[in-house]
Length: 109
Image 1: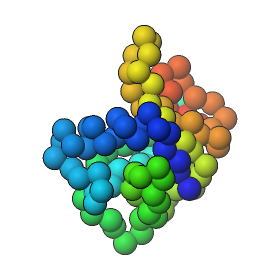
Image 2 (image 1 turned 45 degrees about the vertical axis):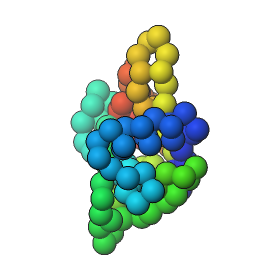
Image 3 (image 1 turned 90 degrees about the horizontal axis):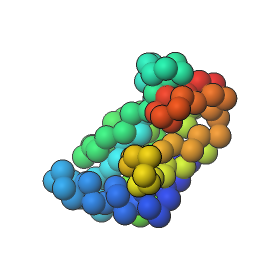
Image 4 (image 1 turned 135 degrees about the vertical axis):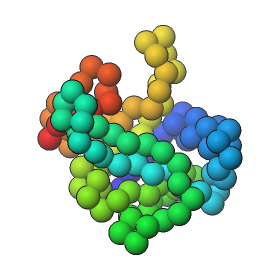
């Protein structure tokens, strides 16, 4: 399961609306891909359709879809949003990551 913090929920709904998506019916697609300074990086985008192998979750009013392969890396992750002085953006709090880069956008197991 992937959790969504209250601040991330507000930002997701705002961005989905700005991009022409409906937060009630559309999804946030979370994935993992090769790359980044720590070996793996997070991929976050909006999607209107669920694929056959996707796992679907809903937390805090946000519908999340994750492909089967990425799910193994993301179990227990919380999606958060930070709008602090050091820069704004989504942050993945992933308990499975052994090492993360300074920007928090990549990790290794």
